[in-house]
Length: 86
Image 1 (tube, helix red, strand yellow):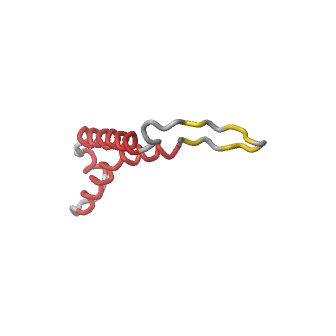
Image 2 (tube, rainbow, N blue to C red; image 1 turned 30 degrees about the vertical axis):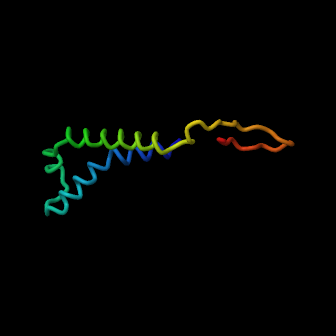
């Protein structure tokens, strides 16, 4: 459960990291003064867009194929059979 949260957190932080790298490559320091003038609303909006895009891609390409049946975990001959989709 922690991995999807971490994936979405990285997607949200990505615009801030790119902005910090851009500041560093531009020749300035990554000090507090440059971050005070940062376009924070734009960075936050881009972070939200990245998270939404990540969720949409995960919803579209993740999971089982359409029309498949979920078989929950069960016991067969005294052994636990893992859940699966058929």
